[in-house]
Image 1 (cartoon, rainbow, N blue to C red):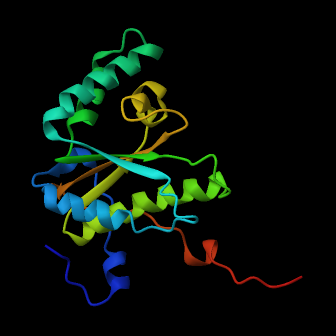
Image 2: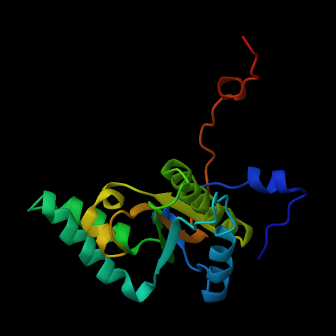
Length: 193
């Protein structure tokens, strides 16, 4: 289902991040996910390097994902408390669909790593916008798991990094507007000295 809005700017102005813990079924089916990820790949990419990858975690793999998270968390905290364990379980099982986005730098390229990193971030944003266009809500999370080498190693290997965990589904709660910066605080016209 595509959002029907009067202009592309109006469409983009309606995108909101959803809290993954509030997302409910349905999430994108396999054909919709393919379309969403194909759209996400249409991102600025100087040098045509595709310095990012997408790994989907299907519903039947969420328990295995939770085990990886628990194991990685225990590396730094041998005896996590009940609330920490519950938070890990919630993270692993929330929302109908989950995509792990990996920043995959091409270190042998003349394209600066910073530009490649920006492309990975743009791919994440395109993914969220593509999901919104299909009528789904998305949430881009990082947290400790995105910076854990052990979690990263379940999906790739150094020098890759997890750019984010992108959860997709249907909004199970009203999406709220968050405070946005004041236009004049972040936009200026350059004047030569």
